[in-house]
Image (cartoon, rainbow, N blue to C red; front, side):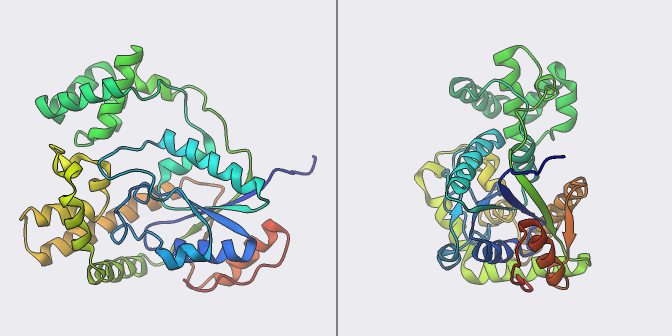
Length: 325
């Protein structure tokens, strides 16, 4: 077997609040790398505190890519992410540096690393028509229509997920072919890099739950609710008939904050709902990560030396210990 001479990349995965940002920055500095965010919330401008977006000091330590790509009233798909991420990775490799792919959005990782099945591109006219239908007829009726034309997709897509319902109906109306059939076609191709997959996850679920709670309280102290108030005050957001259906507002914590500012429940109840939603997100992320059979798992708090050895072996040179994060 010949030597694998493909460029290197490191995929740093993990549930929310597991320490990916700090580790990614440390590895980027030690390896001469650049960070590519693989996070569906960080693409939105204005989602900073509640999305734990790297701040100016963190961004100054290492180059970051795929942050602040869209306004919060816009949408952004996994297919768009894959195109943007590959373009960023091509530039990093051309500069002789190592891409550090860091985040917790499983669909984005799959689109980037494995490719997506071909299907009709987004059509703005059809999209606008469907959004108007959703507002007029309601999500339940639109999901029922999807179930009639594509039962397999409807079984996978929750009846309260407007973005995926809209996309599935868009594909069907544009092509006359169910999106589930398109998705069964061969993908566009894997990322042409030799990639080390690392999962950061505390061995004890209670540790992760504690980190989630402490981080959310820090977000509140940093002004998370003021951040959401500023989003609500944007004229473009005020013009949206159903803001809670926007992908940006559906991001964990933001939906709960939005509902609280709409007058739903007490401050204590809002805090509890947001923390619980974040824990549920972490559970879903961990479930997806267990399906990544070629990934290596590390507890970042107690296995920093083992993590260092794994990276050193992969890049074939000594790497300083990233440290506990």
